[in-house]
Length: 113
Image (cartoon, rainbow, N blue to C red):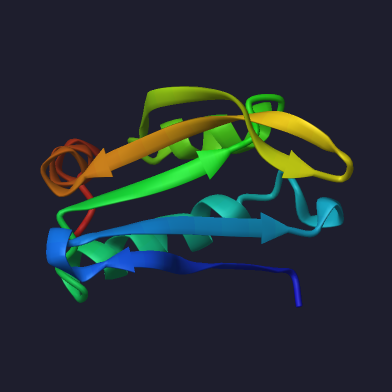
C-alpha cells in the first residue's frame, strides 16, 4: 500500500464531498499523489455528479496545499486552532473546487473529461 485517497463527509443534499488523501513519505515527489487525486476528482464530478469538493489541510503542510492548487482547488477559509491533534490545537486551511472550475482546468490542459 502506498497510501489512500477518497471521499468522506459526503453531503448528498448539497452534492458536495470532502476529499482526503495520504501518501507514505517514501513515495513523495514521483507524481503518485497527483495522479491519484486527479482520478478521484474526475470520478467525483463525472460519476458521482458532485457540484463541489472540499479539502481540509494543515497549513504547515505546504506539499498538500500545492497538490490541491495544482488540481484547481482554491483556499476558502482558515480556521485557527480548530483541530486537536497529538496533544495540541492546530489550524486548518479549507480548500474547495467547483465542478465548473475543474471543467475549465481540464479543457485548458486538453485532457479528456
